[in-house]
Amino acid sequence: MKVFGYVRVSTAEQASSGDSLETQKDKIRGYCLMQGWELSEVFVEAGVSGSVPLADRPEGRRLLGVVGKGDMVITPKLDRMFRSASDALGTLEELKAQGTGLVMIDLGGDVTGNGISKLVFTILSAVAENERERIRERIREVKRHLAQQGIYGGGKVPYGFDVIDGRLVENPVQQASIAEMKAARARGESLRKIAVAQGLQAMTVKRILDRVDRHVD
Image (cartoon, rainbow, N blue to C red; front, side):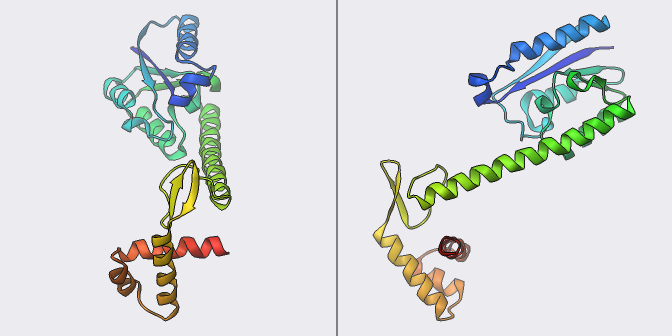
């Protein structure tokens, strides 16, 4: 049996989190010591978001290509390996099918061989995914609020505005274009016809008008 560790931090966590790479490695080494296992290698995923599926991460892909029947993978916490419930459960089933164990120290052991651990694993995976979606929504709300205050919150600059000294400032030419689009749409003209007149793509015109309508609402 070969034993492999897996640790990960995102870019932000590298600078601010107490759950550092070395801390995670120490937890894995300590667990191996208690089990009497020899640790073959620790796969270190530095600066990779947990939203990226395990198989799409450089070290995650390498890990999955190395492990085989009878091997054991150890990670200190569920969220070091997974943020998506579908990714977590899909990977778990693949590992089980090839006879590889998966130890999550925060869940108390091998989640491939214990019914209770797998149940907890399933629940926590779903909770982690839900929390991530809540974070995304909070970020979207903050950006919408900043835009309403005329403050640039990052990302693509909305059509009709320029960014000057960190604030959204109306672009007169593009604002006039938006006004023309709205008037044309009110007259019943098609998106395609409006797009041709403005030198834009039809889907671009739709997105612009949808955004303007939401802002008005």
